[in-house]
Length: 191
Image 1: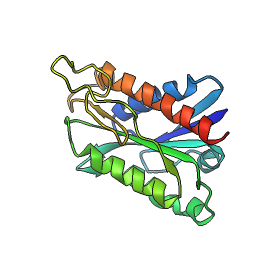
Image 2: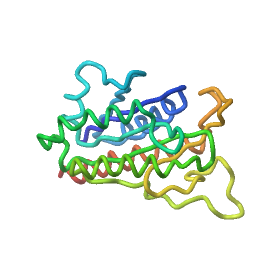
Image 3: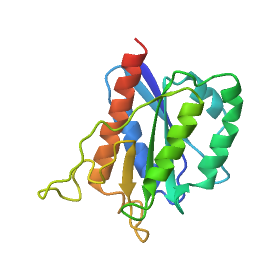
Image 4: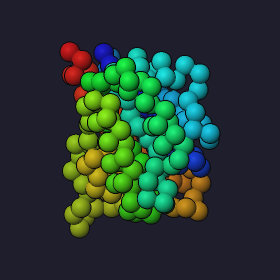
């Protein structure tokens, strides 16, 4: 058994769609449970959010990449996590991260590195995608891990697209497979 909490901020709905795919993948693993925990537009968790994170076996961080880094709402959440840090509440939990931005690169790796650093400060165990990139001549935009990320799941949504239009199906399948990997890792880690 493992329980994964996907804690994320979404400014326009695209990262929420990616979070839902990560959640679906984690919840689809036999014997696993998962839940979504959205950071508000003010950078706050809903009531009981900190307790849910403390009870989780795995925490997956999600944020859009704005101007080369995580949204300020996610950063506010990260700063507030110093309270559980003082009590080592997340130590030895499995951690992972994902991000979405309007450009193919958009400096998404900076956001994943920020999430990784947050996890390392909490003494967590980081899980990457474990997926080979779709980088052959035969690859198409909707292949799994087309953006070629190893550190965490990446997605791209054109800035003029609605959440119904982006992220694309390949990025969402990457997110689902990533969520399943995190839940499976948490189950193995907690044996």
